[in-house]
Amino acid sequence: MIIDSEAARQQEGSSKCAGSLEGTTRDRPGREHWDDPERAALVRGILSRIGDKWTVIVICSLGERPRRFNELRRDVGGITQRMLTSALRALERDGIVSRTVFPTTPPAVEYALTDVGRDLQRVLYTLAAWADDHADTISTARRCYDEQTRA
Image (cartoon, rainbow, N blue to C red; front, side):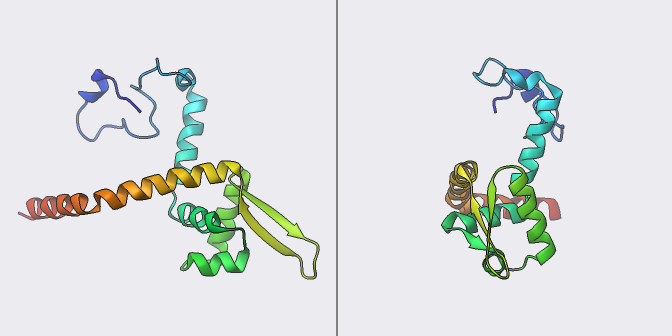
């Protein structure tokens, strides 16, 4: 997202941040709908969903292969049954995860990434690689910031 010069001059701590589409460049192809408040709200909701801690972990786990619920729960680790159910339902609703019920006794349910989910997984892996590439720099910056703010 490119912030125009007016937005760049705003005071620190403003509401202009990811998911806030105000002050963005509107001449980029495919971004003309950002003037629509409903579209902006939808984008913020999507960013909120994919920025959720459990969502990222579930997507990464399903990126390896489809999984059944309990296998996924063990792989994710630390997530409650209720939270995993909620995350999977939300991801299924968003078209990121598919749910397949097999006609067995008891019924077996398998979760897998959809094409949209695999596309998102690639983005998340790119973001994870960026975080790994810059981890030392960010760690140093945090340490310096903490030392300055303690004084």
